[in-house]
Structures are given as structure tokens and as C-alpha cells.
Amino acid sequence: MDLSVLDQSPVPAGATAAQALQNTIELARVADRLGYRRYWIAEHHATQTLASPAPEILIARLGAETRNIRIGSGGVMLPHYSPLKVAEQFRMLHALYPERIDLGIGRAPGGAPLETFALRRERLATPMPDDFPDQLAELLGFLHREFAPRHPFSRINVSPAMPGTPVVWLLGSSLWSAAAAAQLGLPYAFAHFIAPEPTRACIEHYRRNFQASRYLDAPCAIVALGAVCAESDAQAERLAMSVRLMGRRLRQGDLRPIPTIEEAERELATPAPPYLSEPTSEWPRHVCGSPDKVRAQLLAIAGALELGELMIVTIVHEHAARIRSYELLAQAFELGGC
Image (cartoon, rainbow, N blue to C red; front, side, top):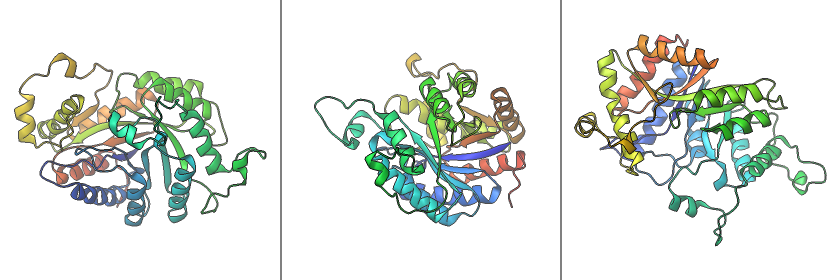
């Protein structure tokens, strides 16, 4: 089974956003060396917790720092942008790093309502209609040069022009995204670490309703989930306290950096009120434990969903522990890196 990395560029307490971005660069080098399949960068706005609001810029740097791993966005929040501009950015990345670029497209805002308003293309008195399906169709038209001959955009030559194109993935955490990816015949990445409740329903709906397209002959899905791996179960559970507290804080709108283990131990000693409790789901957002335990849990999830690839997001306070977690997973799955 293939493993990939989703990196949100977490900012540890006591560090700067610049250091978090340097951590991302180092982790990408490590993932490339270890044999991970993909390395995707998330998009988040106006938060002290996560450091990357512009994945296309970071992807350009990571391409120069790596050799074999596919790199891409997990994802670009298309409602904020012009489809032509996104097409140009990712065709540029494709020209720099051919056959290595994934363009993950999301519909979520990636920030709170005020930031979403500030990012809007137009600020009308009434909210803009949800035109994401039209935006996505337009983006695919620009990337694949498939506008009808009478369409005015058919006369636009998107540069840089070269053979091939980035691979477009539809990202989501709901049945809407599963249905859209199936109807359009696109590969689908489900964010289990965001919404763990509908994971099985979404993957099964996507696979059952998939329509072959010029982009893809058969359904192709990835599930992204959290994992913390350490030499022992106890050590992994302790490391994972930081991300558990981060999740509780985010549900309260608290956007501080990733807490230390000691800080997490203190705050988590107080039970969360019911409205902050984790939702019940078939599988947890984050699996943690020793390499054998995490491997068994991940294989069980992949087997149940008939997946050949999982995408791992690991958030802990110490960067060295984060790297070690990915190293242990690579060894457990025999990824074959050098």
C-alpha cells in the first residue's frame, strides 16, 4: 500500500511561522527519501496554528527540494480565485516539475467568515451564489483546452504551453464532493481527519456512482487521516495529546499554535463539555501507537474501504518527533525509500 503526506505546516508553540515553513521543507525532503507517494500542502488563512495560506508558493519550493515524490495542493480553495489564474499557476508548476504535480481543489473557505469575506472576488450586498461547479468546469476547460469552439475562452492559450497537465483531484468531506467527483470522473480525496463520520458512505458513493471520463478510467480515491507513530504506544499517546488539545481549541475558535505536551496534559485533565466532544465515528480522526499497531489500524481502514493509498497528516509539538513518526511508518510499510 502507498502512503502519502498532507502537511498543514503546523506552528509549534514557541516557534515562528517561518520556522514552521522550514519544517515543511525538511519534512518534504525526508518523505521523498523515505518513498512516500505524494506530498500535499494545505491552504489555511489568518491563523496562528497553521502557516501556509498559499500552497502554490510552497509547492514551487518543495519541487526544487525533492526528486521523485509527487507534490501538490491539499488543496486550493477555488471559490477564492479565478480559474484561469489557478490554471496558469499549476501549469507553471507542471512546466517546472513535469509529471509530478497534483492540483487538489477544495470548496471550503479555509478560514473564518471575516477572512472569507476579505478573500471574496466580489463584495456585494447579497452573498454571491455558489458557483463552484461552474468554476471547476472552467478550470478543467483551461487545463485541458476543452472549451467548445464557440466559447470565447477557447481562444485563450493558457501558458506555459507544454504536453500533459497537472492531475486534478477533488477534495471533500461530504457526500456532495463524493457525488461531484463521481459525476465528473475525477480522483477523490476524502478528509477523514476533518469529518470522520461519513467516510465510508462517501467513499462507497463515489466508487458506486463513478463515471469514466477523459481524466480517469476507473475510480481512484484517497482518505486523509491523522497518525502519530512512536517506538511505544505510551509514547505515541503522549505525543498525540498536543493534536487532541489543538482540535478542542479549534472547535472553540482558538487559533493558537500547537501546544506543548505539558500544556496539553494540563488542559486535557479537565473533561471537555459535551459540545466540544469528539463525534462518534467508525474510525478515529487520528490513529496512534507503535509502528505495528498503527500499521494494523491503517491497513484495516484501507481494507474496509478498498483503498490502495492513505494520506497521513501528523501534528505533534516537536518537529523531530513528527519526522520520526513518518520514518517509523515508512519502515512499517516498507515503502522502499533510500
